[in-house]
Length: 68
Image (tube, rainbow, N blue to C red; front, top):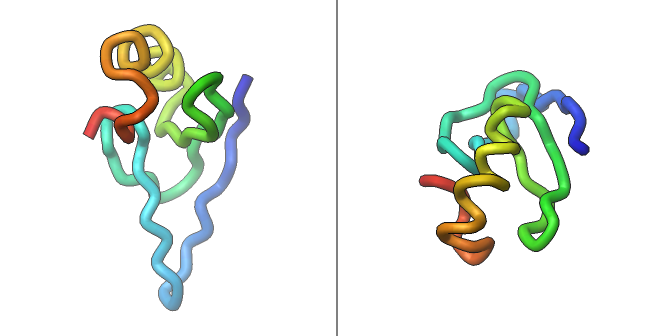
């Protein structure tokens, strides 16, 4: 089960965070969770966590980074 987190916005330290499923840049809040076999992952939406588990992992495994 994941939780919402907030991406720190700073002009001095750019924090480049992307959804591990779709690759969309995340500017504000994001869904962070620990996926079994894949480690900690960040998603733009909780639905993307479920798609990652149901679709991405069975087809591609955890060795590749997200759907990018």
